[in-house]
Image (cartoon, rainbow, N blue to C red):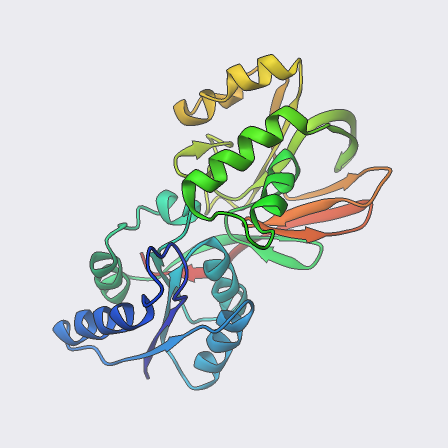
Amino acid sequence: MSIAVIINPISGVRRADEARPRVRLATDVAASLRTPVDVVVTEGAGHARELARAAVAAGARLIIAWGGDGTINEVASALAFGPVPLGIVPAGSGNGLARELGVSRRPAQAIASALTAAPRAMDVGEIEGRLFVNIAGVGLDAHIAAQFDAPGRRRGFLGYVGITARALRRYVPLRYRITTGAEHVDVCAMLVTIANSPQFGNGACIAPGARVDDGVLDLVTIEEQSRLATMCALPRLFTGSVDRLRGCRIRQVREVAIESDRPLTFHVDGEPVHGGPTLHARVHAGALRVCV
């Protein structure tokens, strides 16, 4: 049985010809460990998912995804509920899940770790039929994701910072009705985040107590006290203390419904999706195996 390495050649790139050196590095690391691999390169959105499904059908025993959160999501979505584990080589703007799982930012080390680690189970979230492994949500973060994904936008961390700064000045929070079991809450929130792991990426921690293998999702709602208070509270994302923020509530859920009076844009591991006025999310405990 083979091992597949799926490479997104444009994730986090500083130059246009990144595919060839990434293919060479993956092949060389595998050869040093005497492990044959099949290396393939994506050609556009959705291709990583197709390549992962093809690798599973061909009998792969491990699939390594080299790319950003979107690439990781595509491959993980193809592997969820099955026996083939996922390896990760982070190369995106945020790399939230990879940071939480302790994956090295050095590609050679990340590949070697994936090839030698024992598989373990982690949870997977689902929102409106789409799987996520890190974070999903509506509100400010989904608005930023939609802006970041727009054609012609500057990619990378600095581009993300610029979009966030503009959104903080202009974004108008919506009112939501949130249902978890028998509890109904009406709230005007800056964001409603459904977290499988603690952080968005780049060290920004939105759900300090979230764990990828606890069988629940952390539902985070942040009500805005004032725009100035919101901006002053941003450092708490990087100190792991957002849960102490006034207006922040975090609870663990297995299912949640989020309603509004207008169609909602939500994000799935940073990828924006346009939905209806009601969103349903749930957890699938232990649905994905990872080698990290």
